[in-house]
Length: 441
Ligand code: UGA
Image 1: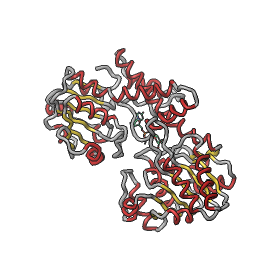
Image 2: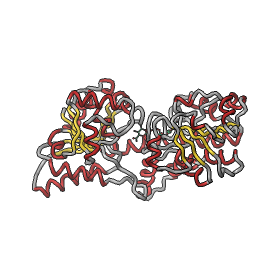
Image 3: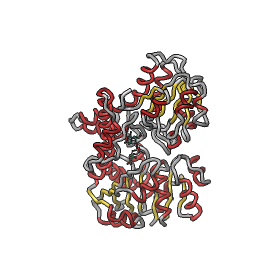
Image 4: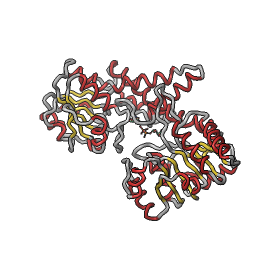
């Protein structure tokens, strides 16, 4: 099939590369000419395991190409995917500016029947707005042309997106057109593992499914963090509780890992957008508001624990920080707990010596050169001259630590672990003070 994808960001690139890899002919469009030139030269702007290899391979096969030429893209493909960003507005609702801009562009260049597929995370009712924007543009051109709009939300996790695309739990397609339904079936037919996982539904339900999935996962995380809070004060251990409840299949082990709060570009944005949608309907979502509030509190926990360890005076302290990305296997620092921590440390007069296997460059881009931030190239380099160590992200390389050597390196024997990576008794036996999440101090 011939497929055009608008937006060469995270979702657009993964979708384009994966669809080209199974034999479809794909053209990816973006308004950023620099990005397109770099992509055509095989330079991938984001870090996602396996993505670069897929892009290189499919550029070579000729099944994947990148362009800024929207007219060419519209006339290239039957399927027109919209995969542009929907950043939050000031009030938390999703900004549809880019989505509707693409819709108008498609309307501007459409010559024959097209199926416009929305992959961006958008509020319920957006497909109708896309439909309207295209129809309006066509009518301004004086053209009468049939087309369909459907919703096909993505459920990709950063760091595992390629696998998620081809072996995910389900593919949700919202459509009211038989023709679009058949085309979407054909588009995903090469993914044999997903064949019985295609779920067709009406468009509004598909749009809401995406928000409901992310809100549910965020709720699970805030729930376990709330219990961790209680466990800490009651002298219980959240890790034992996690095993105790996760073993019940109705609850399950997924997404009940306590930590320093969820981050990333999706959960915070989507929970806020759904809260906003709810408010617009005259219904205050107490649950979603609590999910967000608990998460904000959780992001402040690491600073709180450090501050406690140093009698609320962190002035002049050097804090080693392992892990800047919001989760492992990505260089993404959007809404990362590490940012809340660093900013609080700087405000308290402390210095940060940070190490992350992938996100150093992103950190420099966000915060620039500053005297109170050193970015180390190795994890042990970040410990040199440090008063204490805090772990924000559970990268694999942080899991094996010589606690004896760590105690000797740090000026103060303080280890704050935002991801519960270690056995408290082992850490404490080495003479370190261990502050984890929900495990007593
Ligand atoms: C999330 C969803 O998992 C995807 O299904 C969805 O497609 C995506 O958002 C999106 O809307 O595009 P992602 O943001 O990449 O994916 O990251 P997750 O792996 O879900 O992790 C989100 C945050 O939750 C991370 O900060 C992680 O550390 C935290 N987390 C996750 C916990 O604190 N505890 C857990 O048990 C699981």
